[in-house]
Length: 201
Image (cartoon, rainbow, N blue to C red; front, top):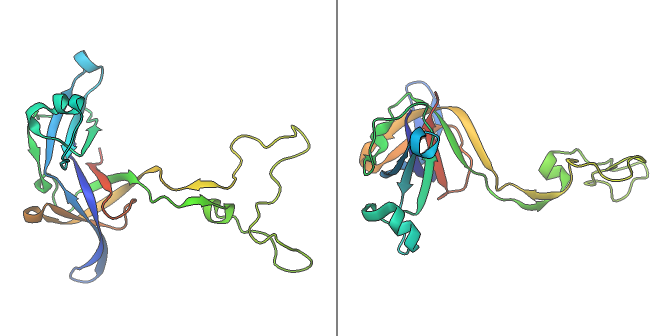
């Protein structure tokens, strides 16, 4: 299993022999292996990876990463079996190759408090024939029994800001000199957001 942490740069397009491919540029690495977890001590197999730097870190954080540095982000990846890595190893964009199929996870853009038309793709009410003020209303939200709105009913509320994973994305280009990879298509998140890239098992 291959994995890296990165930062979303933005979207652009690459020209191939016969088509134009929309791609998302992701600055991946260099990432440092901060911890290796095993079944005997931790109950599961995982690799903790650190990415970026920050000026100030708490004392527990400094003690955890010891002499490796003050990482801005720490994330765990859970491979199926124990990888051939050790604490302190540095992972770069060369981990991936052009043509690899990966899955990308990130936090989506937050949209704030939204109505049902934008949040749940409701069609809204009719705009004529005696209807007033119903264009973007949700309509009925319950029934006579049990006389309250059922849990899970689609209602207005906060939209976005949740973790999403997009699978089956292909790496079009790898620029190891600048720690960049170009992934075909769009990935969730805002420019500058933290992106988790992992190969699909």
